Image 1 (cartoon, rainbow, N blue to C red):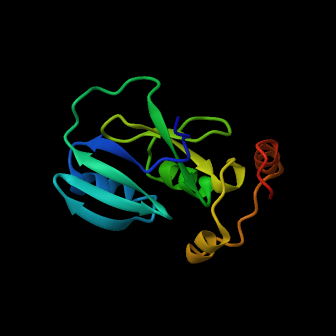
Image 2: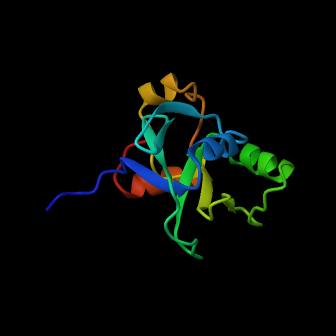
Image 3: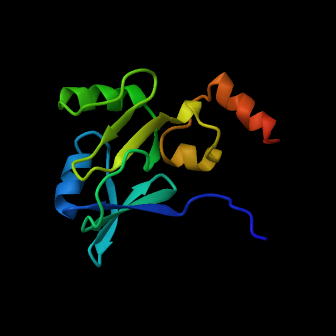
Length: 144
């Protein structure tokens, strides 16, 4: 059997590619990889996310995806500044205009890590993992 090793990309259904790029660009730095076939591809470090034109289903309560950022609180502050409702507490959840539920997590607090070369290329080589993230990595046998 094959072992899962990561996610290549996630595709989000949105009503309009241009509107989605403008909306998400209010609080995330976006680097457009390309466009074509009713989709836009946005680089996220060494990964990407796809925006697909045409919402085909209503939003639901639990389906979501998580984005990792270098500064979760900066995203929270900007969302609040824009009047976009966010979850309360330590977590940061919000919905886009098309009903997609997004969870934002700080890189320091997640159990995956980028290589030193990727972090350096992204200008993030100063980010330090939290002790809880380091413990999770060690428990999986990853040396950190």
